[in-house]
Image (cartoon, rainbow, N blue to C red; front, side, top):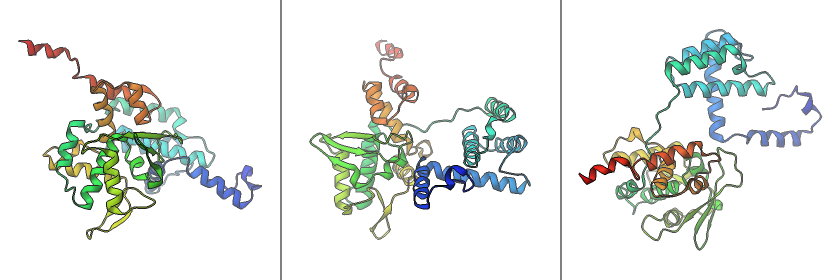
Length: 316
């Protein structure tokens, strides 16, 4: 992360330098860091194959790399790869290659050619939750866990990284429900605490979470964990497992599992809440969004069938 040749850091003792490195390493979420690392490896491997310098990368190298990538990848992937390459250059105190006018022009052309719209995954709507839970064996350890994941993930409008990062110590039950401290926040909101209320029915996220904690005998550390084929509770669940769990029960309902992913929980809560008349502010408070732009999409989707003008056909 830090260059040892940087004079600003030469006079800092080793212990303090390691602490600085630790803080800087935590400036991005673990998922983002993994993406940067993976993207940078892909770029350096490509440069090695084509005998080009990855650092610093010139405009010609970037344009050739991105134009080849555009033949097989989405525009969103190109943007992420370019961001990763920029990050690597910044850490070496080099100007980010995306500033080259040739690279900017190329990206604009690719955007026009292949489009920047990414088809979102289908929102997991409120009315589908009981059907999915109905497909679970809630007497088994896996079923108890999956029910808690589904209900708590929906209630929190969680990103998958946020959901699997929750520890027992992040939960605080009170007379209204449960406060949950969110650690792996994309928005870097260190004080983000979300509330989940008791619903006093079989779909209560608080009770489902408590049932999982008791069944798995978890006393500290990771909340959601993997379970081996012998029924042993193991290490913290990986974030990709959230998508797999959702897809498993969606497929059991006879629906297309490819249309759903972990983000379906987040968009599902937002869209369902909008359909039921919740305000944008209330939805943003739960999702953790800082701006209205993304939430507005969920709200518009939720309101599409509420007070819809086409309903006049019912009066024929």
